[in-house]
Length: 464
Ligand SMILES: Nc1ncnc2c1ncn2[C@@H]1O[C@H](COP(=O)(O)OP(=O)(O)OP(=O)(O)O)[C@@H](O)[C@H]1O
Ligand SMILES: [Mg+2]
Image (cartoon, rainbow, N blue to C red; front, side):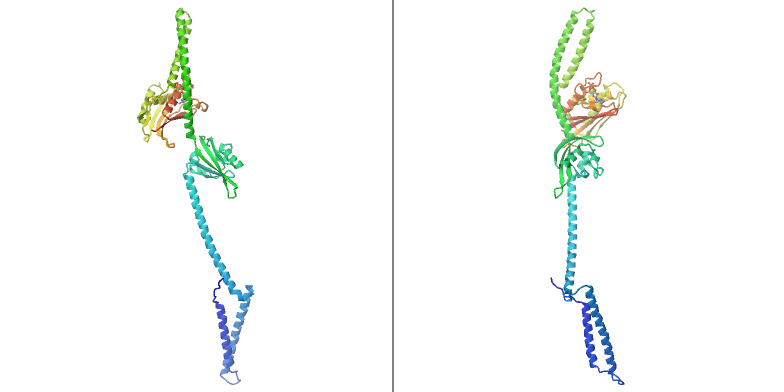
């Protein structure tokens, strides 16, 4: 360790005192002693004597102070004192340097942490999948924007709450979280229907991964979820279309057979009528048989029309005026009282390709049903608007809403089936035909209904 020379003002002062003392002593020895009665040099001798005593006293005081200071500092080795002081100063200086270095490193680490945090936040914000993290206690610690969109929840309402509080103790999400936390295993992909707190039902796909610390200890779970509602709806439509095709082909065959058999029955009944005297009561029964058979024939004809393979003749149509025209035409054929009618087409709706005749039939059936559901009047709203894109698919949404009787939940799944009707004179083919026509346009249809409040049918047609 290099020793730095030290200029100690105290040592200089002591040395000066000593020099002064020695000079005064020499001078004092040279001055003759005082002879009683003789004047002159004798006074100088007395003066140097006094100065010597004063300087001697000072020097003594300085020595005493030095000894005392050493004792106080417990320094028994005066020869290494300077070295120790220098070492001490050096250590202090190095510590100060280290402190500055540490401060610099700390702010650099903080800056880096902030960068990583905002980087992570940007990633979470830009992914289209919902990302939710739970800690070991099942409390939500991260909830990105996409999760909020998919689950229709606000981040602020969810962060800090437990999974059970947000989704319910017996919810599928809580079950998945318990499973992944208790088994310590990641779940690759689960698809399930989720009942949201405000009553909505959505389909989501969830994968979970485990969050671990450096030592491998489990600290939580990450859920990555995607909204499958629209995809499921499309899948259902495709499955339904396939089922309907098979059902249509089968039933058309059976209907033809029935028609042939009914022709035989009708022929036989006419033969019996001819061979029976005109005043016989048998004629009445034969008439009943003839009426029933012609009703059945009408039904079968309608069904065969429904089941017949149809190729739509697609043309570009301007939705606004077309909707207005169709609703007016349908209402002209409906006996009063008419409901209050509102037809709207949003200006952003582009022209779309439809078969005008088929689509008029579909919309007509929906309007007819709506009017029939509002026997005491009510409000009928028909509208066309642009839907938010579904992947690359762009769609126009046509809505037909009424404020009528509504459809009970347990009946909703059956209304599109052929022959399902709750009306005494209904065929139950109206909605089945609507469904078929929508599928022919490569579209989708769904329904929302609340008893005694009303029903909304939604047709989604692709924009070519
Ligand atoms: N807007 C609506 N409000 C309430 N119930 C409806 C509505 N639309 C349809 N339904 C129900 O769905 C059933 C099936 O309707 P669909 O149009 O297929 O046959 P229908 O109307 O009964 O008979 P058809 O159309 O041959 O006259 C109806 O009987 C009715 O119970
Ligand atoms: Mg109908």
